[in-house]
Image (cartoon, rainbow, N blue to C red; front, side):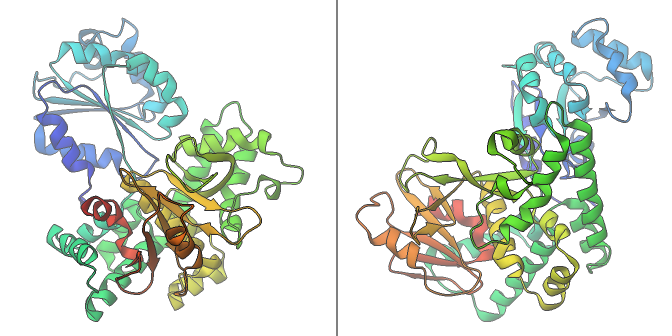
Length: 443
């Protein structure tokens, strides 16, 4: 069973390009990179050559005679004479690139040769990407893949693009969803929040139409990520990285969700742990949300790198980290407010990243003014408030009304309720978050 993904369309467009370069697909492990590339190859090429440098380390010898495409092809065929190289009709996949970044040097020569299409893929590529980039600069394209977003989840459940277009139309016109429709979408979104977007988990849920076995898969994937940290973390303390990774739910459970290194371990200091946080970000395992110095444009450069919140790259990982009592509360009582709304914030942060946004928040020193997220249009700064319980939005109202924030003319509030637009506050259900970029573009 193959689940439709957004990379599918990108790969078709890449193949249609006349002067296409080799492609590097980046992203965390178990998000479906290899499966999507295999599906694409099956539909578009007569020959597909897949080389996995973890499972088949013998292929690391293919560069012994140099990086020229002709030499590498000859060496691959020497190891496995059954592999067929058909000019203009062959896709070569170099998988688990992080195990053998040296192969990236060959991309220049495959690009110049032009007879075969090449895709490289792997997890944790951010860790060694500087080395990969220096070996292939100018001769490759990059694609950053994420776990499934809510739109892809809806596709998996059988919903069409027309349904998604209708959801966006409701947002643009500001018309509430009919009650029955709202309940259906909210229940689907709750399922997605519990499952997360890792394809192995979603596929189990789709095939059985139950949650049976999904928590076990989530926890096994979590164990796999922890094993990756132990295997690939070099030059920094693996224990410190794991401490940060495990401490995220605890810190998101606080009223003040700012991540505090001093709470991770006794005597811990920011300068000792900064490399750990960057490692987790480069590995694709966490998203960092920086605190703005002041809510105004531009966003880049206008933040304090010492103040930030950390979110898991996939909310399913946060669910897998919950204790037994919180698990039961979430699954039995459908209580998304476990850990004081940590799940709400994590799912919104994840959706914004998958829309292409970077993450920023604001907390005014010695004051109650704070806002969960900020995004921008061409000329506007747009605050986004995530409400775990419906209620007043004092900070959002202040940012919109006060003259001292001229870049802000309206804000978005995400709630469990329905659509409503009033006095500059655009209220949407949580499940609409994946459409925010398209909505802002439509204004």
